[in-house]
Length: 446
Ligand code: GAL
Image 1 (cartoon, rainbow, N blue to C red):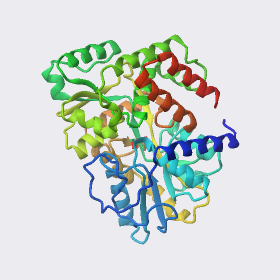
Image 2: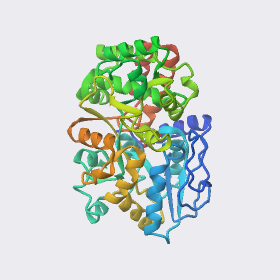
Image 3: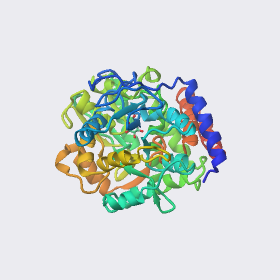
Image 4: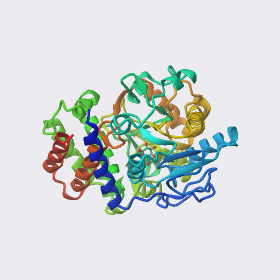
């Protein structure tokens, strides 16, 4: 576990780095209209109090990075539901644009450091919660709340463990996203007589055929580096299997292990199949390449499912299909968005009322069908989910679970920032040795 002093130095570094990248804090002005653009503007919808940024005057300030197309519909629906039940509470949707929290995490770190926490904020289960905020004594335990709300047996035990430290539970999961999925354009596959690949070898074969047919095999939008990191973590999972994948993040397997080297080679090979303008696209822009048929496949967490179905109005298993990332069938890269109670907030009761709703069957079944994720609760009503959802619910029950690096569960935020940088350099330079050395040396600085 990282020492607190080290932690703050790390976070400060992160803040400065993010600030240099132009982190923006969104005001909250839009009136709940869905943005068809790509989520760059930081506007957010839902019922809310317009008060823009820090020092909110609302009773309940909900902080996340769910703004724009493919991101905000679930949250807006949850906020609307909350407002119906609690019309007297003023809510501010303080979302900061940028996939995977690219900008939001830096804004949050600044606020937490300045003792100006939002009433509640989006945080991934796992190290992002535990090493950043729990270790720094910035979160309140929620054990009593879990008891009062009868939540103890409503989430999978493994998930509760991911949001717990030393017997204390620190947040409430609203969903489970899956990271090891490839979505594909079904007509493109059909026109080219292709079947979904299940091994790396098959993937390369399919990709070669697509390339020969003039279609970009794999869409990538790594304007924000996490999208490429996500591909690499899935290759690592496929190459190492779930136990050794975990052992890698636990420091028990070195980055010069021959299977890790092999994974880096596979990564390089896959990157040979992406669209040329990948560095100028974000995840939504790259998913659009698939919807338009310019690209055939995309590896994206299943928030892309929400985007395809709800924003682009594509039909699951008609317009777009899905399959497990090669060699990861039977495994589940878990990304769970959770919300907690930061220390020092004035409106604890209102925060708990919101957490109670997002932890409830009704809350989860309102949020998740729009978000593309599955409910974190074990007793949600499956009739609310389409074929993708019910398939994923079933897979989640049976699969071996693996924590995502790109989405904050496998390693600390400081490590992830360095890993994203190393991957970003790798995407342009293709130097596998340098990539693995950077990942190893970042680890030794932990
Ligand atoms: C993940 C998050 C998802 C989704 C995605 C893209 O980190 O868990 O809910 O928002 O980023 O921004």
